[in-house]
Structure formats: C-alpha cells, structure tokens
Amino acid sequence: MNVLDFKAMERAMNILWELLRHAWAVLGEMAPWVLGGFAVAGVLSLWLNARAVREHFGGGRFGAILKAVALGVPLPVCSCGVIPLGASLRKHGAGKGATAAFVMSTPQTGVDSIAVTFGMMGGLFAVFRPLAALVSGVACGLAVEALDGDGPSAANLKEPEIEAETRPWWTRVFHNGFVVLPRSVGGALVLGALVSAAVMALVPENFVAERIANPLLQMVLTLAIGIPMYVCSTAAVPFALGLLAAGLSPGAAMTFLVAGPGVSASTVLAVWKLLGARATAVYAAVLALCAIGFGLLVQALLPPGWAPPGARLVDAHAHCATGLPWNVHLQAAALLAVLAWAKWGPRKSAHA
Image (cartoon, rainbow, N blue to C red; front, side, top):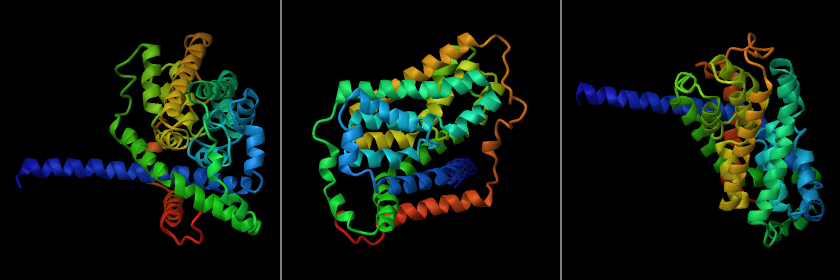
C-alpha cells in the first residue's frame, strides 16, 4: 500500500469515526426523550383502547384532527419521542389525518420550550412557535385526509389488545411501552440517527452563511439541513441562536425552529411506516411550506438589526464538542439495549 492509499484510507476512517461519534451523540441526546415517550405510551395504553381512540381520533373529521393538535402542542415531547406516541394512536385506531396532525404538532414546541424561547429569543418567537405547530398540524391533518384518507382502520390489526387487558396494569405498561413500540420503530430510530449524524459531520460549519446572503434562500437551505437533523424543541433554541450568530437571518432561524424539531429522519421513516408513502410526502410538503411561511412572516415583522435577548449567552457550537458527558454515553447504551431487547429478546406471545 502506497502513501496516497494509506492517506485515503486514513481520511475514510476519520470520516467513519466522525459519523459514528455523532450518531452515538444523537442517540444519547434523544434517549431520555425516546424512553420517556415509550413510558408515556405505555401508560396511555391503559386507556387508549381501540374504542376510545376511534371515538376521539378516528376518521378524518376536523374535530379529531383539532383534538390531536390540542393534545400535542403543549406536550414536551421531541420528534423522536413522539414516534411511539403516534404509533400507539395509530395502532389503536386513530385516523391518518389525526395521527399525522399529532406527530407534526407535538415535537415543534411544548410548555418548556416556549419558556426557553421567550427568555432567549423574545416574545415574537415564543408566540409564533406554538402558532406554527397549531397551523401546520391542522393543515397536515386535513391535507393527509384529503389526499390519502383512511381505508380500513389500522385498528383492525389490534384485536390482541383485548387479551392484553387481562394482565396486571404494570405488565401492560411495560410490554406496550418497552417491547411492542420499540420493536416497531427501533430500526427507524437508529437509521435516523445515522442520517442526522451524516448531516452534522459532513456539512461544514458556517457553510450556508458564508455563501448565501438572500434570506429566502437561507430559509430553503436551513430547511434542507433541519429536516433530516434530530433536535428537540428546547435544544433547537441555542442551535437557532447559533445560526443567527453565524450571520443567518431571523427568518432562517424561525424556519429551523419549525422544521428542526418538527421532523427528523427518524420521524420521516416512522411516518412512512405508519401512514404510507403518500401521507409522508404530504407531511413533508406541509411542514416545509409552514416553516418557510412562518420564516417569511418573522423576517417581515422584525426590524433591521434585531438581536435576540440570549445572543450572548450561548456557545453556538457547544453541541459539536468532542467530549461527551458520561451520562450521554449511558443514555445511548440504555436506548440501544431497550431496542435490542425488544427486537431479539424472548417473546412470550405470538401477538407481541
């Protein structure tokens, strides 16, 4: 092997290491949210039976979609944590529109992220984030129902739930939350983490701001970067401040605050699995239009020279630090252990 071949191999190994390092960091960062989502979904399974879900979230009625959005907007759940909750709704009979509305609106904001947004980015952003979640969730639900409405309900596949209800409540919570749902979405979570890691590792720092000055083009490119990347609604705030510090427009930051938390590669893959290809295309298109629309609105309303309240408080690239805290390693290992157990562990029931 000559020197050039050795250097090429060394560069390839360095890139691979960066991808794996970022993927591990993403898994560690999202692990508490995902595991929390699994736990909440397990608890919800105690009352989210097929009859209750069909009554409140079934079909394509506007009321069902509005209820799904009203339930989702205040919940402090990220784009990965919402996957098990959306899967639970769908498996129990929620309509495609209501499921899509819930999955889109929930991760964009929550009571915690609204408070952080107000303190670090000001009142306009704090108001527009939940408003964007509301508008995009309802629009997505209606669009999915109009273009790809439900045929036979997915709940037809959920008859074994009757048998599960005979077991103790804590057994049902654990089984539904940490076996059934991780088994159905675990592959999408891991693949999504790898895609997110590729974006973080391969897109150079300040790449957009140094080359694109037009605010609308910045929004489009920020959207393209934000959609596959995993970031929760609260963590998106310092990231958006970093975009502003790098020279991007407030509208581009708002676009990221909608698109970044609103979807990730994991979410897209999970929506594809839950709702199908057409609904996934509608989901992505509605999110993109709403992210750009609210970005343009913010860009028009804020005066020239505006600066966010928290501009001096954030290290824009702290999320890229080489060293990871010990708890991040522990969280990533715990998440992978749960997914592996759900996938390959002992199965007590053929219906699990």
